[in-house]
Image 1 (spheres, one colour):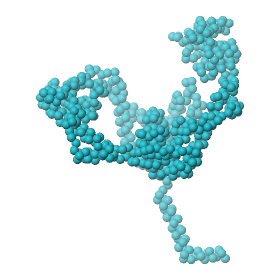
Image 2 (cartoon, helix red, strand yellow):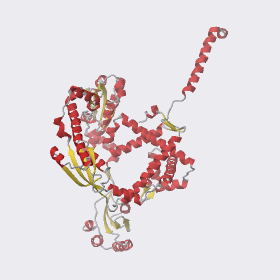
Image 3 (spheres, one colour):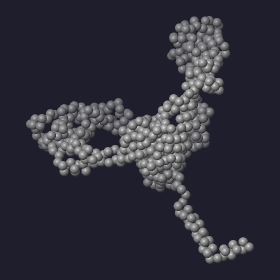
Image 4 (cartoon, rainbow, N blue to C red):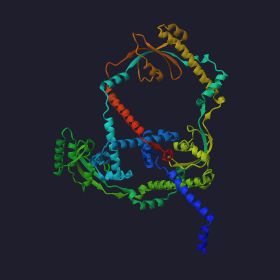
Length: 637
């Protein structure tokens, strides 16, 4: 009965309308999924081939690690700037795109690398060698540590070598001529004889005035010169492992228990006590080896080893003691010497002739001290300190996790987190990135404190790990955007700037008058006297001179050579606003190229190769369809 009623209901008009709506909704949902397409997971595509987010992340991390290694703290400061890191990430992505374009071109040209070439390249890599020979175990260990299988490493290396094959074919054909390099070398080493008349802007400051209208106009036009830096103030909680360690108590019994349970940590390795005789290679290695064999024969025949050492060993320090060396463990001596010494069984045993980088050795075993466990009394204090540090570390990580959980669950402020942690919220005054107090001056903290997203969300930050066992979480409580300072605050600076500009213009006018006279061949001696100026003479000024203003040097080396003894003249504005009349009297060209010409020739060739490379990449990019997906790119950290 019930089924019959359901069938009857399904035939009604209302049921049909409802069914139609359901079908329509499914249809529209299906169309929507086709229109929207699958979610993007790649930051870019090249001719339809994806550059994966994983590839970008790996390349980004490698490049960041390289920059941190090279630049240290300077890079950390740059990394605190989100705009810089956005450009940095795009630069890494662009290099991946360039590599993809090169790979495609190499395939188009049919370039190949054989399996045998791959094998030879791997075997030749010094990273996989031990004692100068390829070690397969080390090879497997290192590539696994890098998160790769042998097949993955092989394919990656093949791709790199094919790419290098293309680059070598293109760039390896560039060269520069010896004459080009010598000409450039002579230009670099050219010097110039100059006479200068300097009109300092400061000398005319008293002659200029500033009106209220000029003050207002300059302030409005040059507001960017009088900006306040962006400022924030924050609340924060600071977790310090050093403070946690103060409350940790470790008893002697705790240390004894740890000692009993970790005997392997307190082992003293086996030690050897030997004497040796060293015969140096000298000019004839074969003769040195024969001498070592002869000395060994004497020792085996029963002659006194100490006497032989004093007579024949070139290790004069140990020879005085009969060749005796201090006790040593494995890992201290040269590998060949160590292997021979630890192969001897009992006191009095002699080695064969052993070759090391220092020469040929004969080794006599004097004593063996077996591996043994250090007594608890000797390591008690060390063990207590170790336990305190371990427990402090455990407590620090536990407290850090607790702080992270609480600040996430109560994002509106740090008060509840502070109560749960038994800590006190610390509050800063307003600060800029340059004036942040410790510990807020850490680049990682500054990056978070000046984060626009965190400020807009008005939530607690994630826990930020600092150096020296510290971590903090912060909440932005105030923000002052970068803005022009009030005129009243910078009035004196504005007046000084206007006066300087006006004084510089006065100096320019007077200097122009002197220049005009020089150009028509008139004397300026009387003018110099009237203006209280002197002529500076500078002989042999080099292109890379650091004593004179760089603007002046740059323009002095653009002046044409003097003709018929008539100097070339120009008016130069120095960086500080002073005006200088420059007269070029002589150009001194070296008679011959310097020893740097060969290096310059190589650099010229490299420069041309770089131009070729850029041209190739530009052409490949023009012909390719490249798409960037910034929303995916931005997620890579």
